[in-house]
Length: 221
Ligand code: DX5
Ligand code: ZN
Image (cartoon, rainbow, N blue to C red; front, side, top):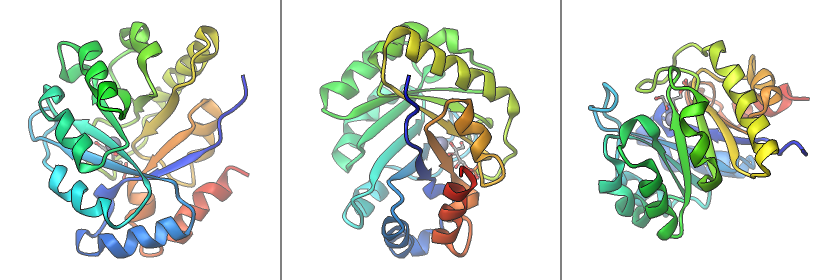
């Protein structure tokens, strides 16, 4: 199957929140297509980040594709809120819900793309039956909750498994990888089969965000 084009998804978590508007303009001007939005509830993960009011507000500042990564328990409670706030894709964690199929269907019913994430210890097998519903499968390459952690190489076989299943089942979901990605390992992750790379500290955590994004694209050549 043809390899998908790389989509870079800088994570807002690494941004200086006082300068979001300015930074997003620069990224958009540099041709970066997606913005990854890490929503944390302090329960599913031991950290709190931001929620739908912030997303609603930055929706007015950019046309980038909003990829909302919900690290919250029982995400169904908030799916409509995030859709209304302007998320283009809502990704939930399989470990955070008793009814992933129902939640994914609820996301789709709102006309928003849906994704399903797995933590480092969760096998691909646990979401195999749900793959036909997905627009995106997200492999965590760090324990969710914090930016700036080290990439876990144990995620690589899971990326390959998802790519093989996609071809075998004739599906078309994106494979996104999140955590510890930068110019030094982007190529490895892309070649393993991922096509959406989340980059927090390595892009919005840098002073020159356009140069940082460019360095990741260049590293694939
Ligand atoms: C972790 C988040 C990641 C994080 C990535 O829970 O899901 O998206 O912001 O940050 P870096 O790229 O710094 O590991
Ligand atoms: Zn994330």
